[in-house]
Length: 324
Ligand code: F6P
Image (cartoon, rainbow, N blue to C red):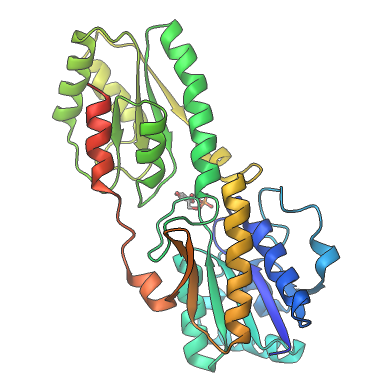
């Protein structure tokens, strides 16, 4: 392999820039060419490429977002779109690519690999941490720290006013952020998509906490929780049933996807980028690089896509004990 491309795809996450930097510099280290692809697979289809070298990625290790931009390409889901992308890669002399993204991006890479026998590698990048084959995805640690910082601030005002706060965090299908930031932020209750808590149990728990002398409380709710009400409907429901509570809602939203990556995410990105490029150079393809027990590992892309990144049930018990 003489030329590798790198792209970021799907929802962005802090640490993507550090991973781009790592891919580019590993290519330079091994004296092969590297090109960046703008706007994910859409840019691949349109041939929106830029040559990259070690100096084009300076001063980005500390930056959130992605300098290559990201997109969710509908066209790449069609075989015509993928053929256009393949032709663009051929034209540019690209012989393999590294895609930084989540399972949607990996699905695209997997299909592309099968269709054209094109060498591909994936680096998991999403704040949701919902990818099988790695304990951490890029951006997850940073997002947790952002959420904790917000919960700490909310705690100050919650306690001054003796209020109950419902804090909604990201996680359409996964409760990793909610569960860990909930424990780290000292939440009373944590609602996640993987676990049906039930409205009755929530009311019971809040009643109990009031009776035990707590004057303010924080409930952390993943946006995809199973309770079947959005966070504002939940507020109305709880207020109607427990009038002793004054409730405020705080939806943290996309601020969780931004900001300077944590040290953990920067090191993770650097390690995964090196591995992804070196796998391609060794003739390996169609794998995701990940981190398990602090060791860099590779998992077949298909397994990474199909496998479940389960929450640690022990954490649910810890959360329950901590809220006594
Ligand atoms: O990156 C995944 C995620 O953070 C989900 O938790 C959330 O539902 C989604 O992104 C929102 O992304 P967008 O606004 O880009 O559609």
